[in-house]
Image (cartoon, rainbow, N blue to C red):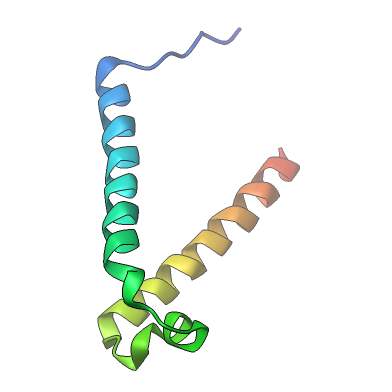
Length: 78
């Protein structure tokens, strides 16, 4: 028999803060990013991205794919 699981106030706080941070980052880059003139400049980041930014982006993309495929595989095995 399974217990009902519910959020505690701290869970709501962490969830709300993570959503708010995403919104703030999106709004800042919406305002800051209006200077992009062409699709090439947008897609290549103006060709002035540093190694840390590109590496973090690649790591996040890779981990997202691993978690998405791994989660689906984990569910199918149970």
